[in-house]
Image 1 (cartoon, rainbow, N blue to C red):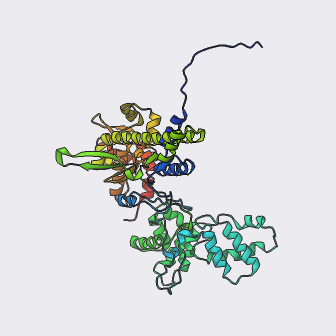
Image 2: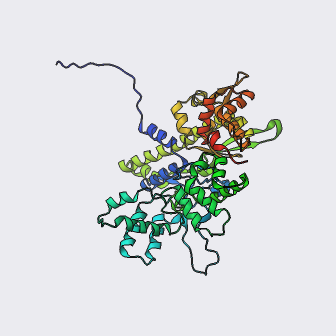
Length: 479
């Protein structure tokens, strides 16, 4: 095959190192930026910083951060359950699974903080103090290693038998004995093979004189599906209860238990949020204005080291120092450009969403990335980077820039409402509904129509799922 050479002209965007650095810094959160600058300060002697917003990422906070109340700890973890029960259980658990406090103990005796203690180690420490035969002790340790982070044992004993290196004829019996030992450890309910058994273990640990204990035990042993399906009348007959108040008392007892006994020992890294901008309202009456300014506590104060710069000027260009000087100047410009872009985007968002600042989520207007990009003369990808993991501190709290965007929903008046505003209205409707007669998706759609919003039933269902709200059948409560 004959090879030929052709000359041609074509335009192609070339990303310079400085542009690549600017893009990378723009998409970082404030904490990531602090970490990046901290690493560069250690590598480049020509770059200096008066102080970082956080002296060390993950370390002691700067005083200004406390004044602004900018840190928001997020603790969220999923739970292990067989059915979605209508019980007001908290993430931290309680009741029979709650840990005792150190009040009343002798001075000098300190209980370890559950947040800093691993569930596996907590259980192994208890086993080490128990007078167990060595074969049983080893099998308890095997069961502990098989627990999930909530303390459940979802691996069957038959399966564990095949995994053990030694398998005597009575291996299954030994594992059953080891399981009973494990289920007797703290926290109560650990080692359960399902939600029903977990609740049963905690109920059995309660005093026999506990009101409704017998009925609650019968419920968790055989009638949890009825409770999950809100079949209250059938459940009341099955338990032999005379009225709905008695069934509510049984449910209250179940709600006091801990459906995830091992969760308090799960490793949960606290995530900190530093707002990039601060939004304040100045003036009163007709002169009131919303002002946006950069959060000085989030802005690193970078400069070139004067001593090294003078050495370069006096003794000529050292290739190594010259490269580091250029790197330092690029970083300073990139950081400055990053905050300028964030401020421009924040001002555009606040100008568009003043109704949200005044009236809450119901005042949100439709807004998409392209509108902000066109207004500021920037690319949509730049707006996306400038709004991801960027936060503003407002009188209503700390919010991510992304939360101020929303698609348009048509109204009867021919105008458009934000999908976020529709969600806020739906949330309020569901909070105000009758517990025994929750509103269906169609009823919610009709109610929105009466307020002038044209929202189909399937759209209501989509919004409800996005807000993690259950369907009407699962929201039904005892009156």
